[in-house]
Image (tube, rainbow, N blue to C red; front, side, top):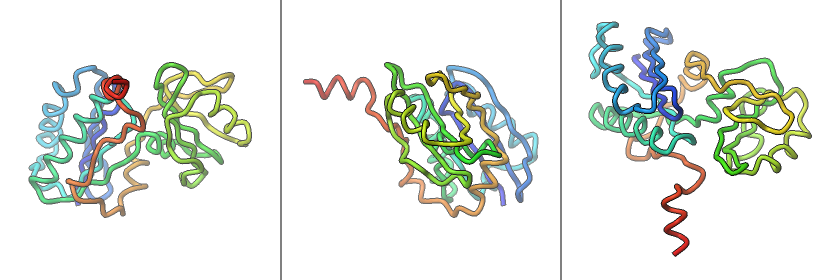
Length: 207
């Protein structure tokens, strides 16, 4: 079983390749031009491991929330590969991926800066089940929810009141192990998850 993992939802582009539960390769590049680096990295990973792209059996892709442009790049690459190979995709929330990348807490709060004192956020229990639905929420409202939690870890890319926040780096092995038995869905059913309209859509709605 060959599984391809793709994450272009943040400034860090991460691509990994697994074979029978073993991580063969992972590559992470910090860039604002994911469209420029994604395909060359994919080609290099396949070449280094002497695996042909058509041998991939499953694709895991982070489909948001996050960078509007970044998400589209990763989802588009995953859908083209999956459609060409007639295989399924396992779409993974970026917020849940941050939680799964950590261990040892009763609760995990994942946040992504959405500007204007808002964040994209998700709260999960120790088994990574959703405690609240992932949402676009004000920092003040989220702080109120966190105040009722004990032994909570906050993961993200922005500040949140007086709470300490750790970096939202992902652990591809933890994520793979959590989702490895997920059969996935048809490529045509996979779409970016934004949790909020783009600025262009919001401005259009004002008219």
